[in-house]
Image (tube, rainbow, N blue to C red; front, side):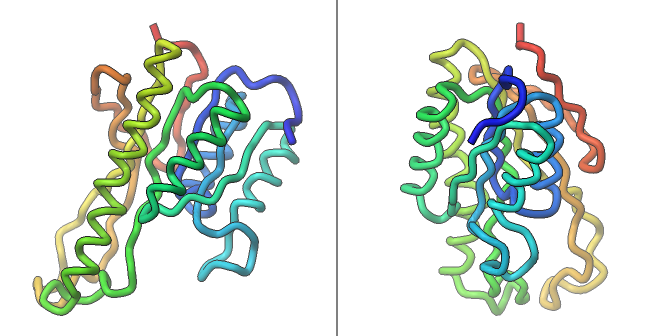
Length: 203
């Protein structure tokens, strides 16, 4: 259901059910973006932590914004394709892709010497390879419409307080690190606590 004034731009946010992804989705909606809210948890109570696609979509609707909820699993390319197709079917365009979602299975909390290579490969596929895949699908749409932006979330790693075999005691903070046009890349850091999104068209 679309509510409120017609959105001028469309953004898809991965990992938007909680945390920074949820904050980005809500902020984009406040700046008159129609937001495609994606993640693995469809409804409250289904995930390991509070937060869901339905909850974020409802919050955007309650604020008078437009939103579409779609399940997306970064280990499943068919779900990535389905989310992109649903976006185009509903809104007919995609102006911003925020690659915020991550994959971190339970083994990745183990020391490097202890987690399996299968877990490592899944982690790299979800964190890097399939984010590139999603970006390529987005770029195809952006090229057709003549403009668009990609945002990749990165980490500000802190010095480890423990040895490599013991793991890292303090998880790094995450923040948006790159915004790019489909044909070029520019570094545009933003603070995670107060993203400043512009709804103006790119030159």
